[in-house]
Length: 281
Image (tube, rainbow, N blue to C red; front, side, top):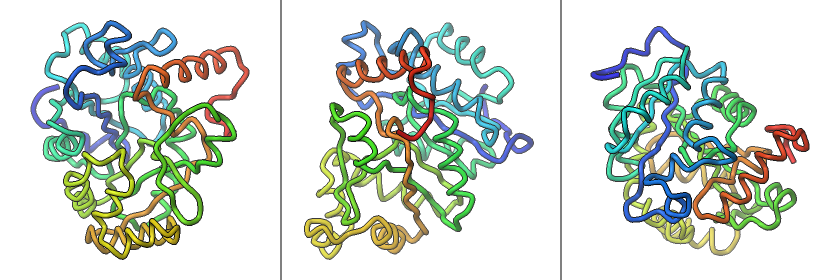
């Protein structure tokens, strides 16, 4: 797992898991007594391993790369290798930010496109979510794609959860931590996001980076999802699509200890058979 991994003879889709830290002490990791959030157990299984399990079960995914902290132990690496048995695995150093990690991964992997991107703090990710997103990507002529979940879907299923919403004119959405770089031109969107990612929890500032007309349209509730994708395409110089996912759990990642409590409740319900994994709620 060194050098430039050759993935050309595997499936059509490479998957990149962002498992690095943004810097500083992470409250979720601290509460769990581990050094890195990706190794926090969710219902007994570290979150990163749950994401690896899901991607290994996805038929479209032929190879997996993980952008990992330099402090990962040999035991950690062996656990990942065992979990990904049967799927080609590359462990890559993470950058100073998520976008830096993506750029470094694209530069390290042989034939990286198309590239599915998700995060290690998304333990509710399942095959149905990935398949739904990938089918929408395959059916488009986009260079870059992002998944979102309508607020109505999330709030109906989990009214207690607090998410960050982009308030589009056709209904607010929350990010689902699923992205795809389908062609090299999609990297232009990554470069743009690199300039604004520090404002990821301030939607109006993100919209402001798209220009005053788009910010005003957003503030006035006139910026629909389709219009946002068209405007983003013009600004990036690459065609972008936004994919709605009908799964409430797709938008529930673990940013704070309260999120982990909800995630563990959902996982335990799945194990008991109360909720069919991946079913739209």
